[in-house]
Length: 442
Ligand code: URA
Ligand code: CA
Picture (cartoon, helix red, strand yellow):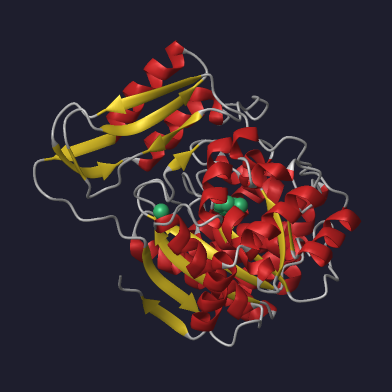
């Protein structure tokens, strides 16, 4: 096997064999292939693409480049992955609800980077919560509670780690086979057998056009088909934050509000939709509609909130926060932001809102930055709402006056008001399964 032939084959647009792909992934993981040859091959893949079989092979090869969890959790291990959002706390809502319905949610999550939040950072705002569990403890938590959420272990898909870093500096991020295999290699290594993907579409998403997002969703569903894992993908909008709360402890609070029945809206609706697909994909519900009924029943009975409480306790956190949210970290300054004039909220720049929260301290600019769990903001209005001058559009939770002033400016700049009525933002666009694409209407 030699790398020059592999690069040449892909340069000429030929499909690579499983052996060639294994050689490439192994060489990326163990350092035997240099950056320049990996980069050349990545660009050839970016330009000439990969078919479904090659993409599935690359996914498996990258997954197998490091440790592979083969979990015995007393059921089908199910996971959910979102391709990035702001104010997107679905994991903290659907994992306990799915567990309450008998699912085994095995969730490895990332930290926030850039404008998007990370579930692990959110969980760390809970006093005492441990997100780095040894493998046996993680699996035992999933077995006993039905869900656990931990940080991604360092040796998961090392080939992807190296290739992703190279893609970042060689303009080869925007490739459907490379994105799809990158995301799923980590899920496969993490042991998931059933996977529900939430593929975001719109500005700030991996794919900004709906067609591009559906292509990415389809590529990932196809990988599942070739690799013998059940994968379904939902394409959803990310025009504005899904929930109203943006910030780590604030998003935990919002998840508890939803599980307690005190809050509803798009965050709950998308969580129920994704959770229903998880129950179906894991073979617990006979179809997604039954899955949704089970999810709603677990919400209404309080079983979901009980599961969150159990999960926090088993991971060492102060589970009393589920009944008393005042035990979560609080920001010293709470500053309402009033509307300056009457109008309809017509556009929200979600990426800019995410960056505003990051700047307040809720996210990192550099990898080693320390997060302030208490800060962020609560959006009081959504796209389509009519607002009168003086009405509160957003409430800031800030560390000090200066950061509150800066955040107010950034939040205002992220919102557009219009004199004409504006439609609500679209939440769900399409459902992609091995059977095909169905466009969703609302
Ligand atoms: N997230 C990943 O893990 N990989 C990509 O290529 C893009 C987003
Ligand atoms: Ca959204």
